[in-house]
Image 1 (cartoon, helix red, strand yellow):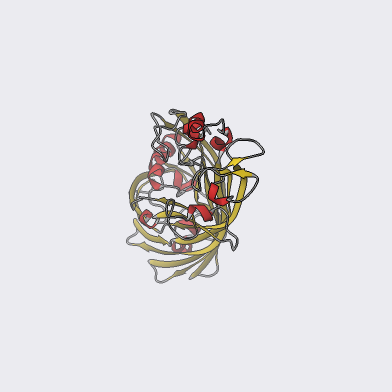
Image 2 (cartoon, helix red, strand yellow):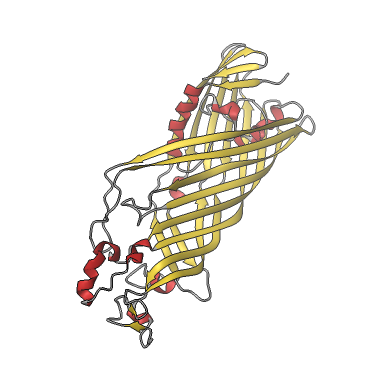
Length: 397
């Protein structure tokens, strides 16, 4: 008879606090493990979700197993007292208080089967990493971030082998597809904040309000392969232990960078009869409008390097009596491998990077964008309790 588990809301809420320390890593690949905040995951024998949490433990499952589910993630982030300055040191006008909300559905499905007494095979689809956020267009930090979305989908195939009566080993290979979007509003040396004050420099009414709507976005996708290693042991009749490693996966997202309403500098249109050039480093004036000349849209093929970090977990499942057991997990995630976001041109006919790679900007050939990251490795621990209320019903805390 198959077991069923009931996850109590209060303990799911405890897990949500844990997940905040895990960047954009997602744990939602198992309903059975969620009930006790994923304590003992990979050591406790549950269902086919072991394909991801510990492939080695599949040898402990009997017959074919199918497990699937949908998780709804709801998160709200409040920000307050936000203050920023433009490139020329002027305060950025905008909303200083606000809220971001996130509603995402995270699916998973896993299948496993016992080939013989020694060998078990399995496979699955899941979402190991994901993040999204969308700030108001008028918030004070709009030159830093607007919309952000990263999602990794994974298909995996695993094999488990019974090494001895008490120990099993497992290996998994995953094909991962990552897609992402980053965007922000552009600060063109404080032109938006300067506003009509630019007219004093030109001694004419040349201010173009569209410069405040200048917006940059980059999107791309890529496929990459990762692997997982697992070990499962039965130390005694009451004690199970697991050690699981998931590799880092390195992507190079390929897509397009796009920027709107970019000022056209005098040096770019020198000798062009359609523009009035005041100085090489100042925006030219369009003769058609009498305002600062803007390029409505520039697009350039680009690449963005993204690494999803390696992780390792040590788990324990300890049986107290026939009804009660406790679980524990200590896990590490190598977030320090996420050092920066580098957006580099992949175009033979560049447009955006002609400006962004200049010494006064990023000072790197082909660079369109660069965001340093200061992430550190994370450690987390979880402790749980399971009560086998009936043969086919288990409560977890």
